[in-house]
Amino acid sequence: EAFVNVHINDADSVNTYSQYLKYIGKDRIAFLKKEVRLTDKKGTLYTQELEYNLATSIGKYKNGGKVVNGKTILTSTEGIYYADTKDIFFKKK
Image (tube, rainbow, N blue to C red; front, side, top):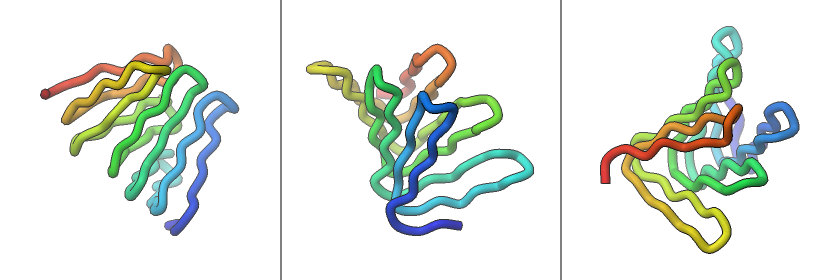
């Protein structure tokens, strides 16, 4: 577990920040909470809770998120982020 100003750098292309982290090393899964921000040089995802799998480079949020890319802002209740392709799929609202 880590608290306050957590930073994960995944393959020098995805940076994730939060105020809380619980990391399951054998599965390479990070559970991030509070002021979560994931950025990939293309856009930034903001959410309060994110499950990020470092083995697959896939992040999932289920309690609301916002993606900002330049002047474009998209929000949804759920989403899945794919770091390899820098794509995000929005679900629900």
